[in-house]
Length: 492
Ligand code: FAD
Ligand code: NAD
Picture 1 (tube, rainbow, N blue to C red):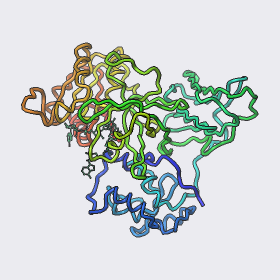
Picture 2: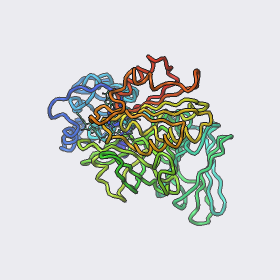
Picture 3: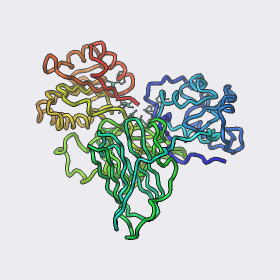
Picture 4: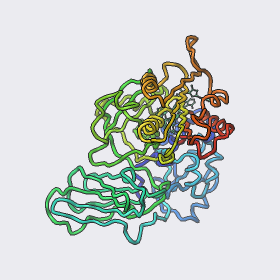
């Protein structure tokens, strides 16, 4: 018998993560919506044909189940019988069949790395493949102690690490420390031999690539060992193969920003060290009618520039989100119903934006549509405060109506205050009073907007919004002779 995976449902590739990820959707038959699927999974019907047993699946066995009416797929080491799900799959039966009887992890990651498949398919779980992630033979960490402290030292052998490279969660007696080294994740996962206090500190010695986690002992006894290894301890795994890890965060505040968009602030537990890199997102997870639903969100700062809002909460335990609430949406109404003090699960960060790309930049152009503004917030802030070479930042902000513009007055104040910054609003459904720019993203709008401050200035363009907006925008940018290296598009 095998254990059913307990967490990180909307695993890296879950469907909900995919929703805006550019896959093609097919029309589903009546009665085949996500809600219908959830109902079926709760009906008690045996969806695997194994009467609730979980089995260990060999490659040979997996290969045999390659027909529509008997289709097993392996995702991240777990095997699912997806035949009952075929008609409910938004990407269609053919897309699922591409992975029939095989390991579909790569295919899945291409389309929807973040979809919550573990939760959605939990009733279809057949069992586990007989393979395990690589556990390192040697170890890349050490530990030492004083009377009151225990220090764990991780040797990354990388120079470019910082406090964002390490995520630490301490819960009861277990300590989980995930170090991000390039595209891989090195995990220390230990059941500590003695009790420690809830809070701890993390230090990074950048030039030698050393990370130190300093735990405070509850009692001044000498420890004979650090503890016992827990799942995947001392393993080094490509990040795309790791499940997302979640911790529960408390909702601290919620404030209206526009008629449908709110600024949410959540607090990390004191026993977590996590910093979201600029331009990266996290997944929020809530249980909706018994099923875990996960969606990605990009943290912002509490305001565009610190002086627009005070007091900024004192430490880096707070994460802010600008989130549009869709009345007919699956996740956002649920999030909106949370009361202050309620909990929402927050994943470790993901993303491929590297802030170092902005070094020595002279012109930064930001193209945002709707909540596609969210990654621009921290980028704008960083550009204006930390890039000495910067000459100009321009934001072209596409919205339906004036009422939809997020932080309009902050943006206008900033443009007034800092002559390097300009903002232009473009409305796709303006009222007759609107005298500004209108329409959708177009060659005419872009060619006028993307004027360099100097002939050969170093330029970078960020674009984010609904998928068709981003796709059209990237195409237009290429048509205007901007190279791949000069563009970052934010997608799922
Ligand atoms: P959904 O259930 O996905 O519905 C969204 C809208 O589509 C609703 O209007 C709904 O009525 C409509 N709809 C749903 N199903 C159908 C259908 N079958 N036919 C027609 N219409 C339908 N959003 C933010 O607000 N802030 C962020 O910071 C943010 N960051 C993101 C970062 C990334 C990397 C990505 C990929 C997305 C981000 N999003 C962000 C979007 C977010 O993840 C969700 O997609 C969004 O919040 C909608 O979630 P929902 O479940 O409430 O709505
Ligand atoms: P919206 O419906 O209010 O539209 C905003 C503007 O986008 C419109 O005014 C229009 O100019 C443009 N637009 C919309 N549909 C278009 C189309 N089909 N073709 C060309 N342009 C179009 O937007 P919203 O409800 O705020 O949605 C924002 C989107 O941004 C969501 O899809 C969300 O998933 C995405 N988003 C992505 C990320 C990321 O990092 N990938 C981050 C935040 C938001």
